[in-house]
Length: 218
Image (tube, rainbow, N blue to C red):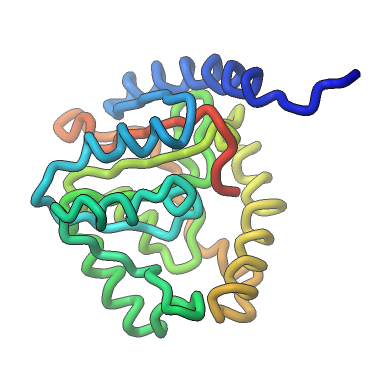
């Protein structure tokens, strides 16, 4: 007799860690929420996006896993700027077209993304190949909503960077090389590193983090 499902325990563990993260996010003029699963994450996300706003997105497996863009399209109340829209073969737009859409996303009202890691002290750690995702997180869109599984919570920045360089970047390179016709990326995914340690008081709440009690993303 042995346990094969620890999803309930994992959710409790992430909930406990999320308490510290959310408390520290608030100290840094950011918003934070914890939800038990991806279904509740999607429900909360949709409630935070007003009808009529322009919504941009960054490349994120987490957004794909919670069906964020599909649900927005189904609701039909927002213009969506999606630089990582794939064709029927699973390929992204050509580079120049993709860059044009990425620039447009910088001027969206609401920007949706994830982060590579978030520390217990409430610091968001993100590494980009092109820099468009971290650029939008820091400046441009009026609101940034970050959705992250509890597996993204780490102790500190050093742990975050080690995990990104040894696990996240290699896996992402394999994902893009295999599925999206972006060959030879390798460590090119580690070009731009951003540590977001809060919002200015005048922009309190601009960044909102939704932590989820399950594993999402890489």
